[in-house]
Amino acid sequence: LNGVLGYAQILKKDKTLTTQQQEGMAVIQRSGEYLLTLINDILDLSKVEANHIELVPTDCYFETFLQGMTELFQMRAEQKGIVFRYQALTPLPRVIRADETRLRQILINLLGNAVKFTQQGSVTFKVGLTQTPNAKRQTQTILFQVEDTGVGVAPEELEKIFLPFQQVGEQNYQAQGTGLGLAICKKLVELMGGELHVDSTLGQGSIFWMALDLPEASDVIPEPTNKPEIIGVENPPPTILVVDDKPDNRSILNHLLTPLGFKIVEACDGQEGVDKARQSQPAVILMDLVMPNMDGFEATRQIRKIPELKDVVVIAISASAFDFHQQQSIEAGCNDFIAKPFEMDTLLEKLQTHLPVKWIYDEPQTSFSATGKSIYSALWEGGTFHPPAMKGPSPEQAAILFELTQKGDIEEILLYAEKLEPAELKRFSIEIKELADEFQVSQIGEIAKYYRDA
Image (cartoon, rainbow, N blue to C red; front, side, top):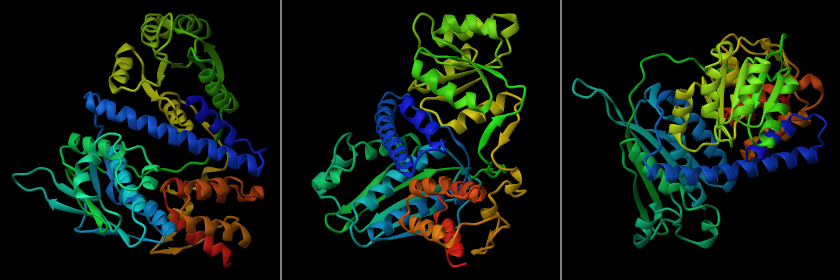
């Protein structure tokens, strides 16, 4: 999968691809991501059952988090001709401390099931405080509830729905999933200190709910920033040593980093990695952990013993499924860790963290506002769109983009934005992709409508 998704990322950047080839690459990437999701589900279930999964709480903008979830499922519901409602039962905290990835995983599963099993009627997503902090209680309890008017579950099958690989109901619904989602959700909710409940009536619908203690965060966290596409690194280009026993994995990193200007040196196992590190004196070593002859843990320890390499940046890149392997890599002397398959942006962020690199961008950074937000986000106030001084699409192009927003297909929006021509639309394309990455489909729709009717 690292090879499939890695080369999908590389080939999607190829401007010479035809429309049909671009669509084919999008299918390859979506299929690979689906398979990755399936594998991750199985691994997650195994890790939870073996007590090898760890929560990683971070400060999370709660309103932005809920807005992204709501917009995603509003579009999916509209595609099916059903209603999706979001209801805040109480005033909600601005920032919470939670494992955002796991909380999103739970809610996507519950909301996805609700939309999937509802053919008419509605899905309602309710969120509210049930307990607030006081003199005796330092935290707050937040209720998450998903209601639908779908097919429901028979009483005798209710106990089965939380069992791994168990699917109930009609065969055509069973074909759309793996039977792992609710089992994982139940265990993750329990790991967070809560309990996942269900109340269902066959033919009338279901209600799933959970109450989680999620403290309000007092520190102000930085708003996410948007940047144009990185196309190079300023001279002098740093040398990066790639240590991996799999030729495909080395090839992917080579093809991702060489076009940016990095000098790449390759090694096929830990011992060769130590030797090549001594010879090439790299700025960064990207180290696989599981290799024959000498693994990445021992290679890193050996490198740290070489005086001229004791401060070299070593980033572990591994498909290891368990969290404790990440800790072991740090103990061996690695500075950071990236899980395979990885996103290009993640790799570049890690390099930015550990190296004094200056990126060359495809477009001037003035295409973003002083707050770090996309121009389109920054010029969206009070529900009214104020167009920036940049070239926008033709009415015909905008009409196609508007139709894609009505379908709620993020992948198709990204694909269409990527291939917009002429070249003067590059800045517009970047802005639309940034909004799509944040699930701001309704904003994209209003922007497209503005240019369509201009």
